[in-house]
Image (tube, rainbow, N blue to C red; front, top):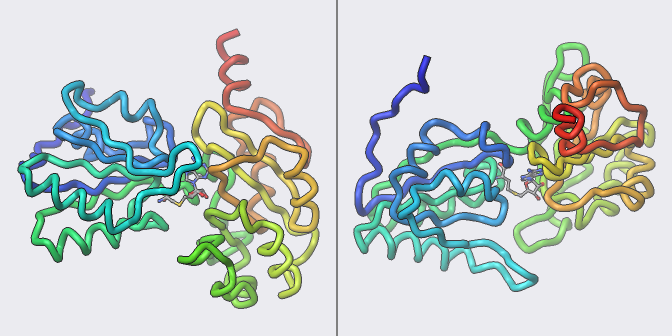
Length: 277
Ligand code: SAH
């Protein structure tokens, strides 16, 4: 059986706004791969993995639109203007973003700018890290035995602080809370959740570089995460999950041969070494 052929043309003068998933190229959609093959120019973010960019048409120009080497990231409005400019130059433009473009990805801002400019566009959803990334750590987002709801929240507001986020309400919103961009303000987020009544011994996991060869998972609890994460290889990008679903990792951690006790770590690279060696 061959991979189904998608006969949708990325037309000159238009933009496809696509999600690239959390990193593993196997998590791309067929539409995104089709866009990578057809685009004249691919405007990509920092979270789009190199392996994914290798799938681009060799003649396509690759333009980085993220934060690099401590330099400030390009302003959102400049990225939108760039997309409009490229489309008006009659290019076939693929705007590629990590995860899903409409989940904490500012895809809505870019799409509305294209709409305002009268540029034809298509949205290609991607697997968001808060779902697919957790699946790679063996953590289901919901389970009938534990939760009927889940909250996805960003760890910082539009101006980079946590002040406008109502953590007390969030703490009561659902048994499972998934936090994007949480690492910078982890301590104050955890303190806010604890003061709002969430328990110290609540299971928590931090998944760094989910689905990439250097995936790293820290299993901890809300009360010990600050200490545990300091002595670990937690680093950006990381997704945080709090709630009883983390315990399923004991059974569902399909990247590991043996269940690991709380606090122990592993990487996808270790797993691959074990497989080939
Ligand atoms: N649109 C993206 C989210 C962009 S915000 C999505 O749908 O996934 C950036 C945040 O996403 C990061 O700070 C981190 O919390 C999360 N993230 C993205 N890719 C990740 C990955 N491979 N592993 C862990 N977290 C990731």
